[in-house]
Every structure is written in C-alpha cells, then in structure tokens.
Length: 113
Image 1: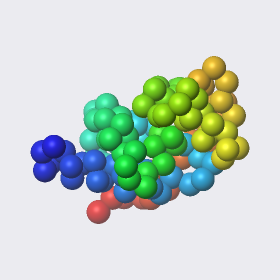
Image 2 (image 1 turned 180 degrees about the vertical axis):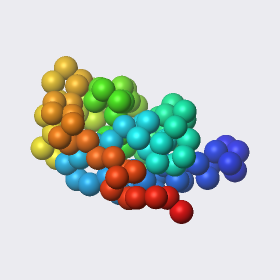
Image 3 (image 1 turned 135 degrees about the vertical axis):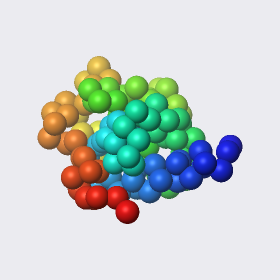
C-alpha cells in the first residue's frame, strides 16, 4: 500500500475509533471531516482493511444508514449483531432512527488540525 494511502487510512481509523458506543456515522461524514468530501469510497476501502486493528468498522455505514459493508464481516449478520448489541435497531439492513443515532465527526470533534 502506498505511504499516502496508509496515512489516509490511519486518519480514517483515528476518526472511527472516536465513534461513541451506540452511535454510527457514514463514510461520507468521515471523508468530509478529513477535508476530502469526495472520498467516501476510500473511507469504505479503509474500513474493509481495518479488521486487524482496533477499529469499530461496524459503526460506519452509508449515508442512508444502510449496512453496505456487511459482507466484509465474518458470518452472515455480524455487522448487524454488533450494532444491535449496542442498542441500535436494524431492519432489512437499514438502521432505524438513523438521525437519532448518527454521529457527525465534524460537529463532535470540531475543526481538524
């Protein structure tokens, strides 16, 4: 992996590690916080490669609250199970009350250095 890509991944992981228990954010929200609004897909790639690290990748979903990354987790419904263990309701791969459980890193963490 290129050094620049690894640096971006590390930045993504640092943000994801701050998502509070029982909350979720989106790929795009992380990308916007990092100043790269058009890089939501790259955030997704980072989440796919995060499973060997202490990163709560299950808390990162698409902008509509869909569990689009669930096929990257072991087992059939591991992503959903992890979210439900945190009190988040998921029906048909969609987080319910998404606006209530959504965590925006730009609001929570403020301006990035």
